[in-house]
Length: 256
Image 1 (cartoon, rainbow, N blue to C red):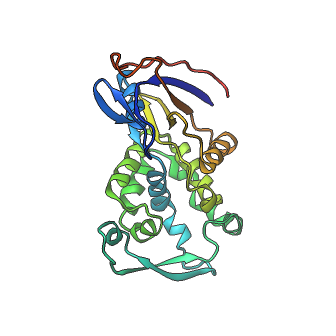
Image 2: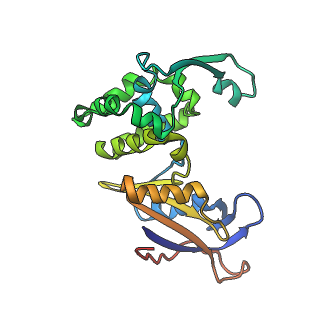
Image 3: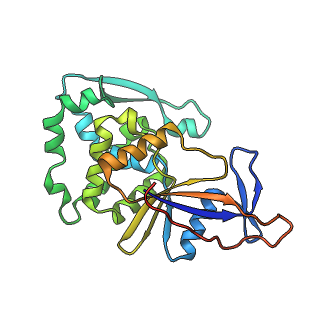
């Protein structure tokens, strides 16, 4: 794992989100780091968890909601769009196995899982075709996963166009093997330029990795093998009366 250290002029570190100067503009630490990469010719997507759950919901709904699974039962939950709008909303009814999200489910359904993630899925533009084909059908399951918002659907589509198909399949396998243990802790940013890409977790002064983030880093090292950087933004040694720090100096160190 690569550690990338930047410096910035901080305005506030007392709130939930630290603020710092980009030129004369107050920005969050995630925005500051995204602009750092953009200055160097990269494109940046704000990711965290939800776009990955969109991909999981789209590609795995038909396996997980398989009516031939003897443990599948009908469940109901509140409409997530209604919740987002501050309303009660109607009940969404869908199918889910009793052991969904556990390692037991993955072991029990291993043969069906291997058949579902067949090599044919990796060929040509098949993943993109299936994304469009299954997006609407997967809506109830994605609502259950809180993977329903339009911005996350759009970000997932962009990830799909950049990540190699084998990376997408590794992500799906990683999640289905123990979904409830692995659904959180995904990095803040996805950074890419041409064929180069990596995920980046961003930390400000005093901000520590959560247990979910530590688990994701271990899981990435042991199972996913995705390019990853941990970006720490330190306080500049300039006072706030000095000219603001517009460009940060990076000191990459590998590994940590």
